[in-house]
Length: 493
Image (cartoon, rainbow, N blue to C red):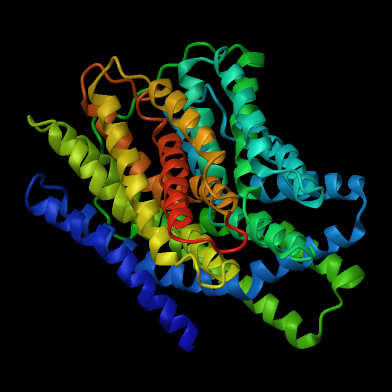
């Protein structure tokens, strides 16, 4: 109970800033519908309770399962088992990721069905599966992370030349959205489970990170290849022009509850089945540990349902209206400044960010403090959202104008930053773009793009998640360089 209360307090402090900022904006720059504001506040309560229960569930259920699976795969010491395990686990986990379903639904809506939700989810999941398999092989065979990432991003930029601008934005967004609340804790635990068996403690520390980074590149490559193969060169999309607001306060919550509960059951079912099969064949945990993990999975389910209901029913519609209202103001500087502020505070409420920052502190035995990582991450995400708003305002600015130099800087930093921070930075890029970003901030961006004359909802509305996934790669590697200058701790040189 004490653990739950401590998590509750932590989450309240994380969600409170974004709630206060939206309320202040409502009474100053823009006047939003009262029903929307009430739903937003109810959604904030759902998010606080849900996220607290979810984080407890991850500690008790998801993380132990991932660690046990990682150890089992590593013990097999056979390459074909590692590859097959990576392919199966990658596909199963990502096809059930709620964040991916949120993004795919928005893509289907904005493109008027030109890119179907189901097709996008399957394509992205296949990409994740192949690259997760490669990531596991890397850990087992001690291949340096920076070499793998250099080659992968080289491939990405070659394929990008042949990809349409609309699909370019969606492909990078898919990468961020795939690494969400369900996928990240599992993949992080899996990488710890494998790397912890290494006799070399330095290698073990470094290899605990980087698997999320490699897997997320799979989503980018898969969507780009889909674009080239299907020859989807031009897409057009718009938001609903009248922006209707539901009069009922509670109806959207009741509407969202049913299908979100189904999606979360779908997300957890493969993990439960895998756990039960391996418990019978390999884990053979005691009854106490078995019950503890099952309890954790129940908490994960309840928490994730409450969290996603709060985000979808309380935050999403308000995000669109807020973006549209502020972008409609005469002074366009407001949309950039508010984008910066919302980016900084939204990251504090991302579930996977808590899992990653806690793991960083644990793996480094408290040397790299989670608050330092969180602060650096928040600055990076704030800059990303502000730059996305600037791209909407300036038609000449294209997504690749940010991504090309950004990734070149990130790849160059890999060769000078401490190798531990390379893994942390590239994992953080995927983790930063979770359900809060995929719903509230993406909805805010779509609303802004719809309000600005000359902006395209597909080209300018998407791509924001890509930016959120990019900037932490630079800011956290720069943090690593600061640590390098201040310390000579073993494993960091």
